[in-house]
Length: 155
Image (cartoon, rainbow, N blue to C red; front, side, top):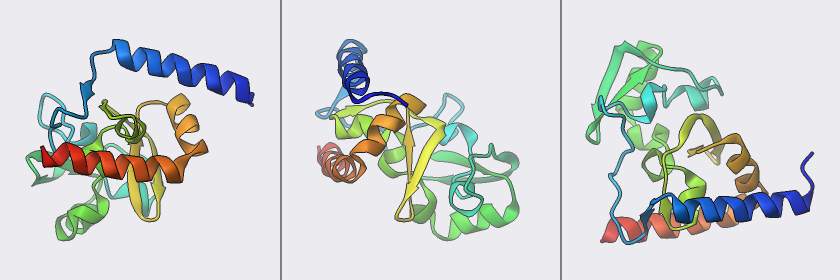
């Protein structure tokens, strides 16, 4: 178990790292969906499986669906059809960018294998360590991220 003082040090280290990494500021409009160079949303993970199987599974190109400028992959025809009928229900929040970074007025790539479903919404996060920090103040950070994402997309 990480002690509170260690979490504080990790938090400050992450903040310094974010400042040095050249992340986009809140004043830059992010792409609506985080994609790989081959146009895959969430690195090809099945967006439906997070909620139905409670697991992160890579999708199969046999079951693909184009939505919001990206190609989404699924593990089954059933998941593909579920997503196609209601993409907003299954797509990750903040375009698949790291939920914690959006709360910090940044847009950083998330790791689709690090995630959490809260109140039926999928949040992707950049690492296990950041998820641990995010979960400590989750309700406040979700509220902050929601506000920041609205600002980012109004510009």
